[in-house]
Image (cartoon, rainbow, N blue to C red):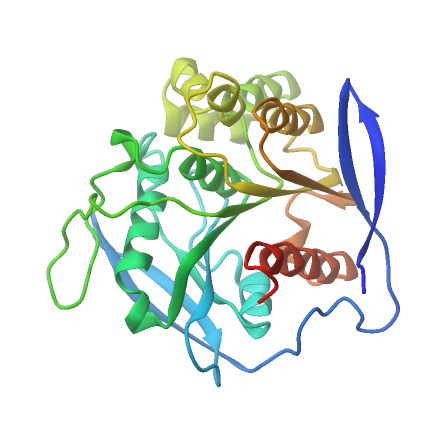
Length: 315
């Protein structure tokens, strides 16, 4: 069963595979039998005003270690929390994944690289608590939406840089401590309408007069130089990436927050360094469409599941 049609198309000089999602009758978008799930919150790291929380979703009757996905929410680095992606987190858990959605430090109280440092810290936390959580961490995936997609990509290419160390995480009964001896490397990233280049998006938001986005960029980054430094395409093209995980990018066709030219820049960057990247285009869908129930969202979830299972060798 396939949930998409594949086309080869040249776009602004880039030859790429575009997965244009099409409809299927009935419930054919489901890749696996759905299961009942459980969900609960627990502290995963020390924050300034108290512990940072993680929401953990898992199939209720699952036995044995489960493939692990760590969810990084969006909100222009300044809003929302671990519950933002609950719709697709629950759906992926119902299909057999252990999904961990995290809170992390945000602007304007905290500045770059606080959030991406916490994402890397959460990968370390997941590895160190894998036995208790029932997680198979032999292959870990990140999924992130909008600015969360950027944070997931940034932690993916820079897992163990000094800037992404130091988050105080909880392991067992011990108090919070940094465990930077544990690698934060991941195997794949699902980037949903990602703000892959903060500087590109900042200039776009200023031209378009989207003041709330301009304010959010200023609050978290503080300067254009910091935005340039955090550009994932720049890091990849410059040869600064520690690794290039496999990536699935989901781009809505009517996204007023994420210009498609920025996404093409990300695809070209991965291609220039020989990385593997897939691009799924959803015509007529707005930014963040996957947070609301719809046929398009159901197809998106099936596409994410298919990509993740291929990273796991079809488990």
